[in-house]
Amino acid sequence: MGENHWADLHAPGPGKSSITGWADSNQLLADMDSAGIERAVLLGWYWENQQTCELQNLWHSRWVKAHPDRFIGFATVQPMASDSAFEAVCRAIDMGLRGIGEILPPAQGFSHTNPTWLKILQWAQENDIPLTLHVTEPAGHEYPGKVDTPLSEYQWLAQQFPDLKIILAHWGGGLPFYELNSTCHRAFKNVYYDTAASPLLYDKRIFRIVADIAGADKILFGSDYPLRLFPKESKLPGFERFLKDIDASGLTEVEKEKVLCGNARKLFGIGAS
Image 1: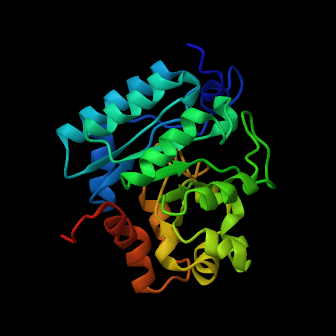
Image 2 (image 1 turned 135 degrees about the horizontal axis):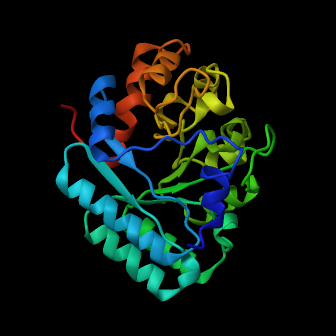
């Protein structure tokens, strides 16, 4: 109850279709196996209520505990809950989760200068815990629940916490292109860009372009599963179709290895198998 933003995006109401698919852990593992995916990173949603955050963190910790070689879990948090939010995210990391996110301050009703948020970020930086932030592209198609995310605020965040590993979802809303600016390039030395929902947002040429601008070392494969990335082609979520797009994106074999697994292994300290 009370998660109106989630409902706007994933349950748009009578007469409106949703591109959200649904899957339990067994279905996710089956889809991973079908696509040859070794591990998946489980990201939380940017919930409006801290109780919902803690429920999702509990689910993720159970999935990770059951399949430690297949899942890496992130914890979500609502900084508006003050000290209880900080304590909860610490507990989630103690339960085996490895990062924080996905977070979207405008949708959750707080600013980047919120004292609890700053405390969480400082703690994450000191403990080498990566953070994933949702970023909405400032131009493009409109959809129910779309929330503006000023890109300059993410630049400020990277400058305030230069050693924090920041993952900007959905290609950073276009921020990789600002790495052509020397000030941004220096500030974004620990910023990564994930490819979640890419087929719904950009032409596959974006892989080659961002690799040329920011480097393939900074791109992380993300799918936004169980979102249906090709809704006109499939009624079910999956990975194979997106992987074919990446294969045809113009990346070299070395670059594809980095994007699909190498960069994540380095980020999480996982040895190659």
